[in-house]
Length: 202
Image 1 (cartoon, helix red, strand yellow):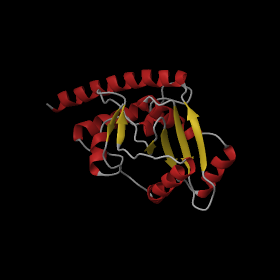
Image 2 (tube, helix red, strand yellow):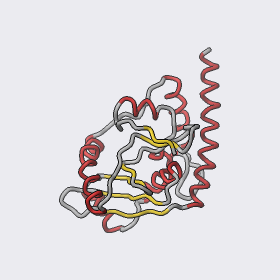
Image 3 (tube, helix red, strand yellow):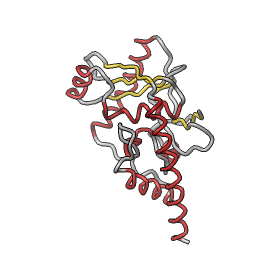
Image 4 (spheres, helix red, strand yellow):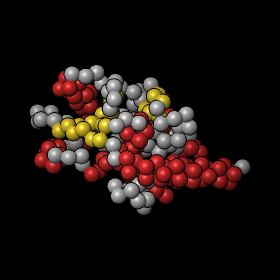
C-alpha cells in the first residue's frame, strides 16, 4: 500500500484523484453480486475526459454533503474515544506503485480502516435498526480493503444526539477477487481510451 499524505477536499487531493477510479465509485464498475455494472462505460468516459483536461469533474457538493464534511471530525473523535485508538488521517491510498486505482479512507487504524457517513436522521435510524453494513456502501468498503490489503474495515454512521452505528466488516475474498479482475479490465480500457483521445487531438 502507498499512502499519499495530502488534505482531503483540497486542490492537491483532487488533482491526485483526477482520472483514476476511486473506491467510493467502485459501484459504477461492479455490482454487489460481482457482475459488471451498467454504469461502467459512462464512468470510464468521465475518467478519460478528466485525464485529458487534467481536472477532477466531480467536485459538486450539496448542503447534505457539506454537512457530512463538517460533522466528520466529531464522528472520528467519537470513534477514537469509544475504541481508545488513534485514528490517522491520510489523503488517499494506492495498492501499489502503478497507482491505477485508489481509496480515500476517513481514517486508518493499525490494522483496519474507517469509513464515516453523517446522513440525514431518517437514514441514520435505518442504519441503527438494520444492524448491518448498508448495501449502498458494500463496494466502497470491500474496495477499500482491496486497495489497502486490510482484513477488516469499520463503517460508522454518526448523527449528533443519537447513538452512533458502528460495524466491523470483514474481507469478502471472493468479491475482492472479482473486483480486482474488473478493475484491471476497466483500467486497461481506460488507458486505451485516453490514448485514442490523445491521437484524435494530435
